[in-house]
Amino acid sequence: MNPAPTTRSDDPSSTGDAAVTSTGPHVDEIVGVPTDPASTATSDADRLQWRRALAIGIVAYLISRLCVLAGAFVRASQVVIDQRADGEPEDGALDSISNVLTSWDGRWYLEVVRLGYPHRIPANITYDQTEARAAFFPMYPSAVRAFDFVLPGGDTIAALTLNFVLGAVAVLLVGMLARRVFSISIAARSMVVFAMFPGSFVLSFAYSEALFIVLAAACLLFLYDERWLLAGIAAALATATRPNGVAIVLACVVAAAIAIKTKRQWMSLVSVLLAPIGFIAFQLYVDATADESRAWFRVQSEAWSEGTSFGATAVQNTLGFLTSPLSSTSDALTVLSLAVLAVMAWAGWKRRLPLPWVAFSLVIVALMLIPETVTARPRFVFTAFPMFIAIAAWWPQPTRRSPSELSDAGTSLDDDPTDVMNDELSWQRQSWIFTMMLCGAGLAVLTNLYAVFGAIP
Image (cartoon, rainbow, N blue to C red; front, side, top):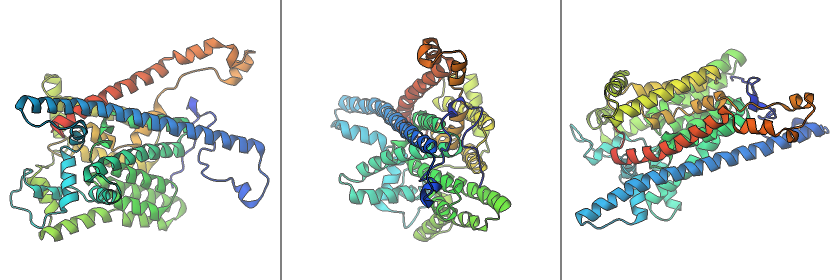
C-alpha cells in the first residue's frame, strides 16, 4: 500500500529491530526448508524485545490510570466536602469517583444506553432536555449495553470497565502501528507517550474516544497490511462512533489511491465504499426515529451551539491568553494544544508517516479547529494518535558508543563504566523522563479540570 522501512538508518535505537514485521513463522519453516540458526536467533530476540516493549506500554498505561484516578479523587473529595457543608447525604468513595468519570458527555452516553434515541425532538431544543442525547453517536452506547449484559454491576460499571480495557487495547495497537513502520524501540516509546499524554484522561471517562481510537487504529493497521475488507468494516464502525470518525474515510481513500496507482489493487475500493456507512446509517436512523430530516444537525446547532468559525475561535483564545495569561483556563488549554500540535507537525515532517496516517490526522485537526464553540483541546488532539508515533520516532535518543566503536577502542561495554554513565546522564534520556513526569502531572490536573468544567468551552 504505502511501503515504509521497518528501521531507519538515522534512528540510533533501531539496532536489533530488523525483521520487526515478522508476525508468524518464517517462510522456510512453512515449506520445510531448514532455517538459518542466526535467523532463528534474530527472530527469538525480536520476540523478546517485542514482549518487553508491550510490558513497557502496559506499565505506562497503568501508571497513567493512577494519575487519572488522582485527579478524579481531588474532584470527588471536593464534592463530598460541599455535600458535608450543605448537610446533604455524602456519596461513598466508589460512587464519588464513578460520578466524576461519568460526568458531562458520559452522562449523555449513559442516557442513550438507558433510553435509546428520542422519538421526537422539541423545537428550539436545549442541552437541558434529555432529547439532546440525539447528538451522541451509537457505537459506544451499543458496546456498553452489550458489556453490561455480560458484566454484573450495572451500566456505569460496564462503561468504565469497557473503557479501561479499550484503553489498553488502544495502547497496544499504537505500538503495533509504530512497529510496522519504524522499530520495536520506537513502538515502546510510542505506547508510553500515547498513554501518558494528558489528553489520555478520556480513556478512563465514559466517553467514546477509547472505542474510536481502537477502531481507527485497527483500520490503519488493516490498510497498511492491505486487508481491504477488514479495513472497511473497522472504518464503518469508527464513523458510527464519533463525528470526527469521518477522518478515517480520507485515510481509506488515500490508501486505495496508492494501492491502485502502484499495484492496480482495485479491491482497495471496498474500504472506501464501506467507510462512511456508519455515519450515514446513524443519520438515517436518527431521522427515522425522530421523524424529521437532518435531526442530528439541528440538535448540534440548537442544543450544543455548534457552528463554524474555521479557526477563528482558536485565534481568539490564543490572543486572549497572550493578553491575559491567567484569566482563562480555556485559553490556556487552547494555546497548549496548539503548541503540542506544532511539535507533532514538526515531528511528522521529520519522520515521514504513511500518507493514510497523515490524511487521517489532518482531518482530525481540521475538525477540531472548525467549530465555533469548543476548539483545540487535549482530548481532541489525543485522537490524532498517529502523531504520537511521529513524536516517538523523532525524539532524540541517548548517544552511546556502538559495540564496534568499543571494540576498536579495545574495550567492552562492561569495561567502560563512563559509557554507561554518559548514557544515563544524557540530556536526551533526562528530557524524556522530565517530559513523561510533566505528562503525568498534566493528566491529574486535566482530569480534575474536565470533571469540573466539562469540555471547557
